Image 1 (spheres, rainbow, N blue to C red):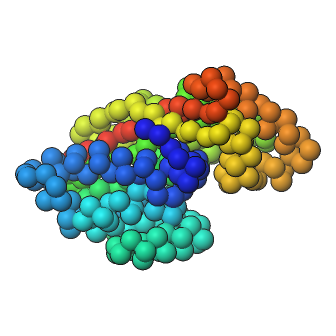
Image 2 (cartoon, helix red, strand yellow; image 1 turned 90 degrees about the vertical axis):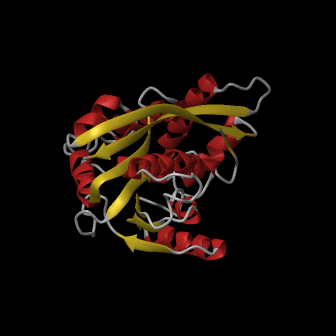
Image 3 (cartoon, rainbow, N blue to C red; image 1 turned 180 degrees about the vertical axis):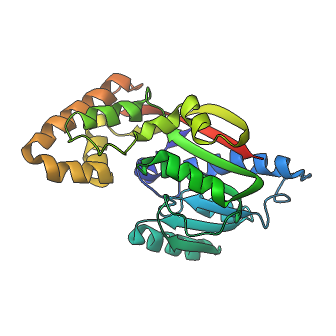
Length: 272
């Protein structure tokens, strides 16, 4: 799967937005829910009316395609500006989505509220993984589905995160590394009540004019890097060089452009 300039920070999961990545994951996730419900006939049959929650939804990476598929969608995020952007996108698309400001560690919903709860590269950045997982399971109905997409530790994004961490102060003791969500054992441990867990390793590929051009864009738009630039001052140039080294080593292009594979794990967690 390729990720365009417009989708790069969003669709590549290094931020939020609606891109091909979100549409692809919904094509995988919602059919799995239809099969669980015993719906036949394909199409929208098992999706229309399903209550769906997108945790850390940003501006609608997965919420918008879910709404287009006929689900009744709620999107939750901590950042009001991203929710405003999502509202505009939903209005432009002519779909109804309920946008809620809130914390993935304290979901403001009753127990058993949703048929499907998903997150594409969002919930993984909440620091207390066990709390987030418990909250996602709490609001999912019995027999429902939790679907998550998370960067793997050994993939390109995982290496960029590790490289960046070497320049920054350590996180607080209660904060778990986001890329743990990209490992099978961690996902299983976070959802002990699951009756079945299905894993698929996938890749999102960024295509750009050059590694340097992508660095200029990414390092000024990805929130973690914006914060790092403020903290590091002149040393941020060293971080930029280190990140560029990762991308150059993993670049699949040989003509000066950037073709960057970014590996992630999709987990479908079914609750009893």
